[in-house]
Length: 291
Image 1 (cartoon, rainbow, N blue to C red):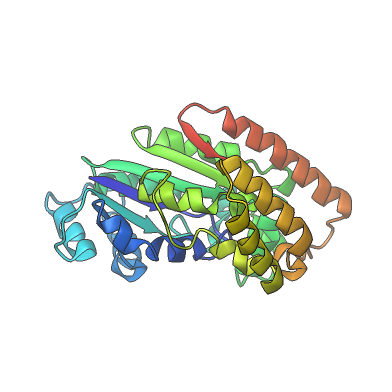
Image 2 (cartoon, one colour; image 1 turned 180 degrees about the vertical axis):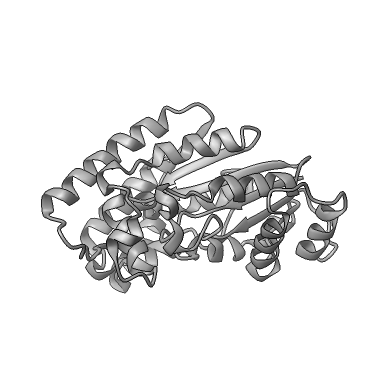
């Protein structure tokens, strides 16, 4: 069976991607793809991995888990999502290591499904906004304590991606930038479902409608009907053009309020991120989805 887990990262799509995938549950089910509700597996898998504490599970653990997650239904692919799978916000930099719990969580996932094909999906985010957002949601009062000695300018997603590849070399790994999601939303839905790129889906513009004015969405839909894009790239150029004109500033602009950070800090973090993404794109074994 194919076990698909979208593991975040923290403070990326706020479960919007899962909600869009769930809208297609019936369509995907016709192709042998099950999209269970998060209540079926998030706590169950988390607590099971914690209970293992690095030990091997009993021989019937996988069967018990799948029966609970699938309600005894049959399928060949299960799609799950949990942005805080590796850790809650306050633990992102615990022990001075970026996602120090990645090894424990991903080894545990592998042990629970030893003979299944595992696919890991993860969206990344510019540290210039990722760090303030996770700190703000962490219920931690001290920024220095939250960072645990990690210098923001030293943060590299490529290090985490390399670790994931090392932890789970048998798993396929799909990566994208959260900043690109309005342009690639429909592709993400299809890739998670493992369906053909031409499969009709619902919710392909869910994110777009959340960050574009109602008037803009109306004009966008009218334009698409009159001028159907011939390729995915053409559709993305159209989306980008409408976003430039109709995007809701409050939805696309992030407030950055970290003591000591200047405009130069944000610019350097962004430049580092761009270079880091270039590294990830060229990494072996990584399926990178870009605009």
